[in-house]
Image (cartoon, rainbow, N blue to C red):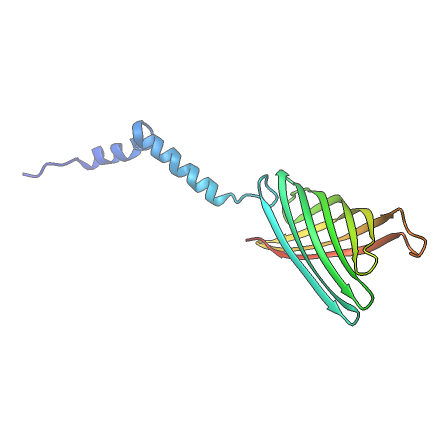
Length: 179
């Protein structure tokens, strides 16, 4: 003699598993896990940290930089950057705090921001300058790859007479991988 459930009774039990008691709690928990796994968080979400390094070299010298950003709200990043520039004529240490807002639209994300920069000229006279600037552009996203293009407008404050241009406009190009 075999004791068990009939086929009809088994179907009834299976259909009730996600409707009541602990089975319902487990089903909701699993559904929640699946949703958080499927829906990825934005790379511009609050409490996200960004770290970037930069560098370049040419016939006249080289430069190295490090920048850290933290999203205090969704899309709103505050940052601090340090750069060292060495040319044939001078050495410069730059410290740049800034902020920018990135509008998360998906594949193409526009951004706008501003910064203040302190220029320390290293060497015999140890002079320094301050500048402020604005930036804007777009970031193209494809999976974990980011490509940004924008424009920066920088203004020297208390511009010395030996500098011909106290305002500069230059391109801003970014390539990044979101980890």
